[in-house]
Amino acid sequence: MIWQRLTDRFYEEFGRDGQLRRFFTPGRVNLIGEHIDYNGGRVFPCALDIGTYAVVRPREDYVVRFVSTNMTFKNEVDISAIVYDKGDGWTNYPKGTIKMLQDHLTENGKDASVIKGMDIIYEGNIPNGSGLSSSASIEVLTAMIVNELWDLNLSMIDLVKLCQKGENTFNGVSSGIMDQFAVGMGKKDFAISLNTDTLAYDYVPCVLEDAVLIIGNTNKKRGLADSKYNERLAECRAALAEVQKVKAVNHLCDLSATEWQEVKQAVSEGILRNRAEHCVLENERVKEAIAVLQKNDLVRFGQLLNASHDSLRDLYDVTGIELDTMVEEARKINGVYGSRMTGAGFGGCTVSLVKKEAAEHFQKQVGAAYEAKTGLKPEFYLVNIGDGAREVK
Ligand code: GLA
Image (cartoon, rainbow, N blue to C red; front, top):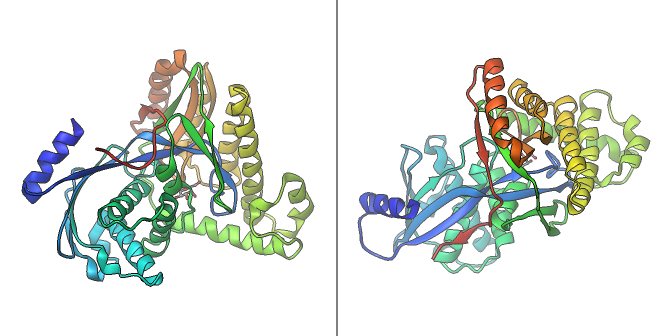
């Protein structure tokens, strides 16, 4: 249905001729390992079965026409001179991606003009700005499309890296690699155990037996999230510099919990020490979470989810009243293994591991209690773990 609707709208916007192609890239949820993908840590995300859809047709010139059924703003861009322009709104994400691919070709002694224009229409069913990676989804989707239309022969991991670079250098958010990696490389029914330092990864079966993942959207707008995100990165860099005065490490997450106890006095008490402690211990939690999930120990897995949230609240300071309230209410429900914020924080979504039999009651009860306390109407999604970016034939 969605493809038919998108195709009809495509014809309306751009006319009927030529062959159309269809592509999909999911969103992601991070199960555990938060704010450590820019500290060399291990993360454990999975791709979702919701995401961003695109119908596209190549052009012979260097114009890209962007339309999204979710947004009123449309854009027409000359890709022989791509520059960031605040007024270009959401289209800065796909623009940044195309620019990164062009630059990559040029840097490798190739002709960037092989990338030509296209007419493209997007539709997403990931709630925007909710921490489920709607921006990484549109970036990786666009990268895959350009790669396919113009036979660039780049691997998905190359595309993922270029998308992260676009987010960092073109869109000004110093995010790690997790989101682009998860939406590009995800696999149905598996979570990805990703070492963000080396990019070595494994797929871990995510068999939840009697349980489901429930994503709770606080519907709190993530105001100033980007600047606070960059601030956390700066704090981690500062803490790392202090650690490096007493121990040779490349990343905060190179430290084990025991090594952290040995060096923590070298890190300024307060904010910097708290941030670093979160990173080290979160990384340890991820490793344990992966091990216990493989033994189907959902009880321990849930405890680790809870501990992750508490650390993000108390040491890393990225939760806020809405996420804390939703998590607190979730944990009161019988049948909840664990509940935490997911993604960057400062609003956005929680993820809870809930017994199937409690799922309905969970949504009603947490929804009512959350709304009563915050005045915001939440939304809940029972999501499945889906495949990564792909062309749909
Ligand atoms: C955002 C970033 C990711 C990651 C998370 C927090 O989603 O894009 O790289 O840092 O926040 O874990």
